[in-house]
Length: 153
View 1: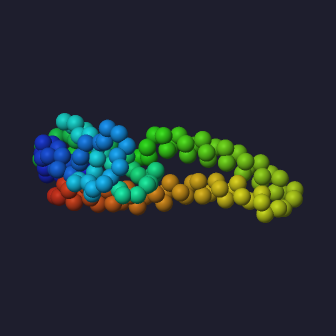
View 2: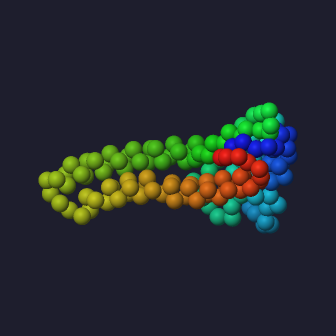
View 3: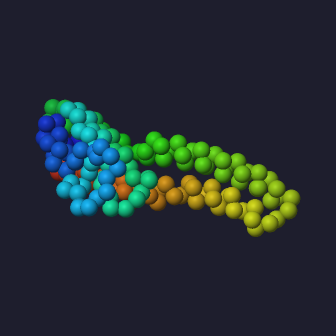
């Protein structure tokens, strides 16, 4: 994303909408004052949206701010939390192997229960997309509006 804002102005806009991460798992008794939480450095940031429900697939947003002749270039990556990514890889690996074994047996003798691991594998592939993509779109739109005057994302 490029913007006409200076790196310092980009940092100030981020500070206005990001609160520090909690030091412990919070019990939210009151509504958060800012929509995002995380850390903001001089030329980088790591943030995530604050939501009132659970979503293990909430995008972790990492960005780098680079000065340009007229404004700034902001490189943004949205990805799954590392622990969720590891869990999904292990889970899909195990279920995928079971699905392959049941598919091999399915050619010899059909039984509807043999399709369960295949369904679990497909569900495991789709579930992260259902949780990640809508949240990533919301964050993308928010960041584009935050850095008004952006040329592209």
